[in-house]
Image 1 (tube, one colour):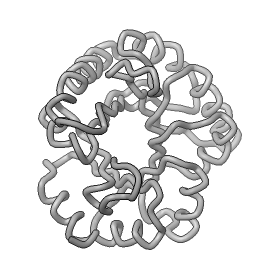
Image 2: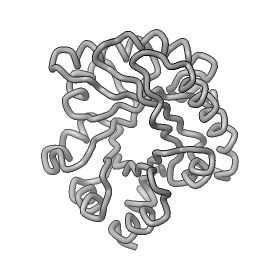
Image 3: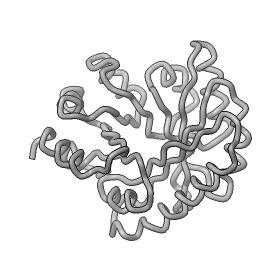
Length: 222
């Protein structure tokens, strides 16, 4: 199937109010454009440099979300390019984003990345530390916490990811009730190509899909 057919099929399956983030890691600007022309409104990028290349071709026809690990030395460029950063997992990173946004008069919507699987090799804040992190960064003036993100396992039986999504949704609901200043729990970004249907069942209202839109990459799947 073509990118266009893939996008149409996914959009027809998603419930109303669910945002589709097309995960565009390693994809060409032409592939990304095809997805946009087929109805994608949010592009997710893992690398600032790759995003720059696509942005030069595409511009602000769509929203750009950063969905990878963000190094502090890339924050200055990232805050100019992106409309949302989905991978906040430390006070240090949040503070740097706040500082760089202040310099250009921008308020950046961010999601807190939860390491729901407690995997050592993955970034993200541990579930039990989420509230403390949100409280510590809620006073920053140039970022706004607008929800949570979690990955879940990348491979294997999609059903195995359900407990991670259930736990993240519980944190999301709990954070909502706290009514913290400058925190608005609107987005719950969970699930990828392998697991997004399970994530939707557990309350996700944003999904990140790459392989099912663009086809397999040679060396990894998302």
